[in-house]
Length: 213
Image (cartoon, rainbow, N blue to C red; front, side):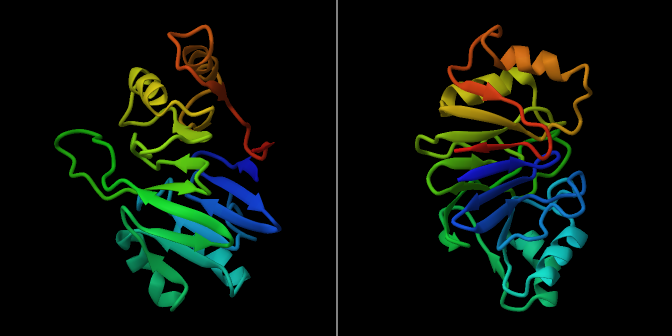
């Protein structure tokens, strides 16, 4: 499987000539989802869900399909009947040849005064876990964790503890568009061998950079 990091929380996974894209939001490239056979969206916040980017991908390929939670599906399904699938925690399905399991229910707490929305994470091929905007536990060992390093709802101590608890073989940063170039080395150090320790290999990919899993 090939993993390509797109801007912010978006990633592309490629296997056997097919492509799965997760969270092509407004902070990601305008064509982030174009060419995808299947698209997954974790929740409705605009940095993860952008209707224009989804429409572009689904219109470019009449066979492309979308899997997401109800709050997003309701905004897209009328334009693409039969191609938008609503999922929730505990569901399992196959999308573009990838086996996907759904974990989680709620977005992380931003502030007690702000109502929590729904959020799901996706475990792909039992190997790659994208939690969306929550520190959801996948409930099983994973090889690669897409770790949301910086958001209005988290702090680095929580990210460290999350990595320790999930204990993946590899952690790859997502949710990083709000980090300045000055801040990135700080997070690299905190999550790397010179920090308090997360017990896993930590890496950061530039948008467009890929790794083989």
